[in-house]
Length: 215
Image (cartoon, rainbow, N blue to C red; front, side, top):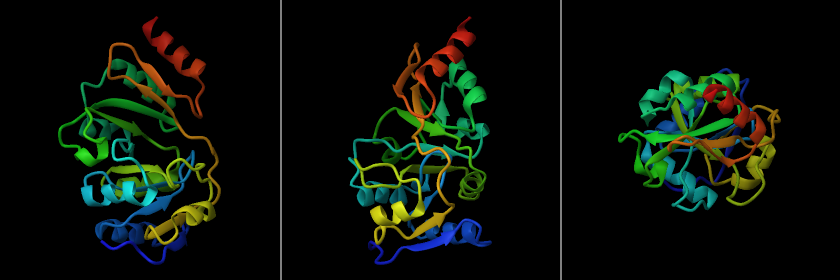
């Protein structure tokens, strides 16, 4: 697909917003949308061509995997293997919300999503519209912040347009994101859970949840 020359911006309140987004996804295009943290840009997880374009439009290194946004915890079994009890504890306490959990990937996850690695990062956003979009798109979107790699994370549709206007097909404008801080990332693929990035949830809060389970 050629890079678009114009980027359409429509409000999430538009009755056909999700239908229009699905048309864009179906043609291999990219959609930016609000979440509970920052604006994301994504494509259906099992459409490798669309996912590959995320790297291109952001200037994202191909060695850096792209997280998945899920519509529900029930979708975990479709994307992850050997899910440890710690993941369930964290998911129960912090999902939907600003926590990304790194798990062992299922073999069916496209290589472009995981950058060829053995793990996959997953999150359920606490955003009603975006959950509906994810569900309509098949239950899993490969998505990352809707910026140029290395630049500040966007919290409004106007900031997304400044970064990615002319590079992506559609921006869904849901107003300012309520959080504004990226998710905290916890890796549970080894025997001891590791906090890889502190974001909206503080380290102490994660550690307390894990201690409560261990205790």
